[in-house]
Image (cartoon, rainbow, N blue to C red; front, side, top):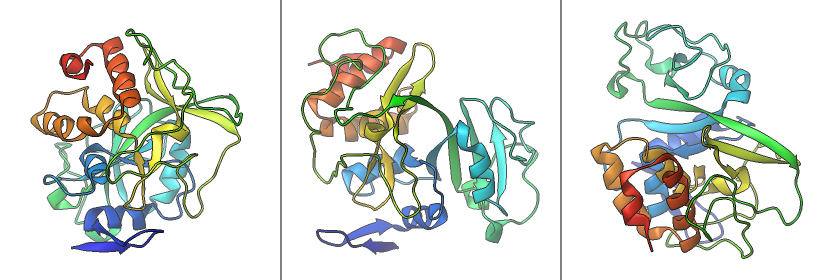
Length: 271
């Protein structure tokens, strides 16, 4: 099943799981974005494969707001700052990288499994990724720098963008941070820190964009950078589907970013 989003153009059918996420996140005033496999499909404008759960990204500095927003949910944390595989998260600060498995109140059937394996079929359909955000100073009208460590020259993540954003099939680019009802906008230049050492980051206004499905989505190059951490079959499939849509600038940024950390995909991003 799907719901319909009506924007300035034609009505767009939104997959049921993404529509559910949009409803769940309504009223959450801090930055967030759809990521993972559903983000790939959002940019492609179609469902390309089955998805076990829905991945979203929030920021470590907003853990208190996350805990308050998901009142009544069962949330189990994994990563730095968590208490164990089956302990319910009590809102304490979490380190990065870490994530939360979430089960909504209407699907709670008992305590979390002691194994720590949270199955979507048992109601654990939400995976919340905890990421790092940095504030770099006052935002200027010409802000558009893509920061990070790169090694291959003109398209490196640290080069300033002199032209406006490029677009591809089924993709919308906003001039500023993705926003929605109740979303807060900061006057500071915020960055999404994608990797701590070496530091890889992007301005939040470029790293998160509004999608045709009506939810904020991690930019295509951000999605693929995260997927480069693993070499699972589904990540390879997502890479093959999404990389043709990258502009030359985005492809160059991704190439330089993963070159800094090292990855087998490097050869396919040349040129």
